Amino acid sequence: MTSGLMNARKPDWPVWLMVGATGFGGPAGQIAILHREIVERRQWLGEEEFLAALKVCMLLPGPEAQQLATYAGWRRGGIAGGLVAGTLFVVPGALLVTALAWLHAAGGSWPLVAAAFAGTRPAVVALVALAAWRIGRKSVRSPASVVVLLAALAALACGVAFPLVVIAAGLVGVVVPGQGATAAAASAPAGSGSRSNAVRHAVAVATVAAIIWAACYGFVSVTHAAGGRGGAVARLFTSTTLLSLGGAYAVVPWALDESVARGWLDADERFTALAMGEATPGPLILVVTFIGFMAGWKAAPVAALQAGFEGAAVATLFAFLPSFAMILGLAPFVRSIHPASWLGRAMTAVGAAVVAAIVLLAVKLAAAALVPEGSIDPLAVVVALGSAAALLAGRASTPVVVAAAAAIGVLASLVH
Image (cartoon, rainbow, N blue to C red; front, side, top):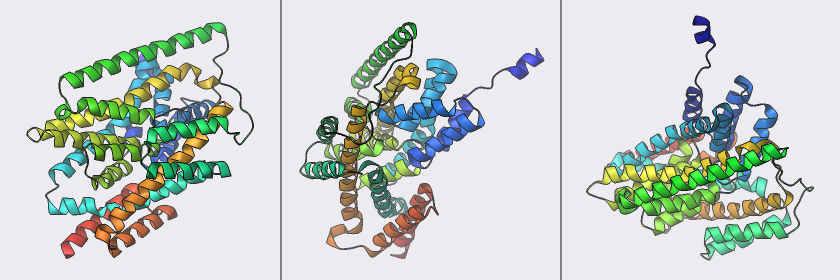
């Protein structure tokens, strides 16, 4: 009996919780942590399967690192294992963002809290500008990509909706000859039996996910969650995930603009949302948790705290439901899927449109943070340049840079 206990497999959940709590550094950092823990240390996945799963997750909408963790959990323990892994990857960051959102909302009239959040604005400008540069180097590598970028930038600046720009860019990528050699078309697992089983699995997961989405949507609508905004929050952030081809930054600018237009955020709160998403563990898409909290908080002044928590929960749930459905549905196919050439071209074009959206966001944020009220703020410019230099040199992590900027904001308020 003692031998049986000694040989019992340790539960996986502490590993997923640890990965979620230490997942700083954006998708690259999170994927590196996953590789170290599940390939190098524990050998739950082989190198080849890890890379195959990563490629599929990068092609799907939604946060690729969270989907990769979900796939690894599925390989360990089926659907239940995938749900546990993907959920614990998100929970630490979601809870932290919710707590910070409450601090922001409740402490808006506290001078030092307001100064701290204001101090992060120049750092956020640096973070967004570097994201545009980092993603642009990978996505804009040909004359055709440059044309798509410029056209997308012009369309977005003229007010064309981001979803339409993404669709147009994807269609251009499909019809315009792409770079690189032809790739094999997607293929199902070998063998008619395994193929039919995998298809049945995908259909079952999609059906159950649709039922769960509908039930949750009906519940938040009927109960008037988040001060009556629960249904609108659910619809927006389901769309946010489905449009996030190429990473969270593909759609975060659009989600922020939509939230400002709906009155859920003030224009200046875009800085706070991005600062929280960048400085906390977990996917950047957790920006929606902050937006959901603020949407509920502002909708129900009498019960603001409850409505805020409900808004944060609804936003987080509906942002990640599609991600779970897609990766768990496709899990049996992962080791045999190869991106087809048309899909690769479409993704390249969408990537160029994403860079345009990030550039436009960086310009808007820079104008608000560095040139407030029409005059240059020298301290803000210094903080923005210092943040960019520290991040480029690799001398400080994103949370440290954001915290330092907040501290500078507090000190500046005390001096003045």
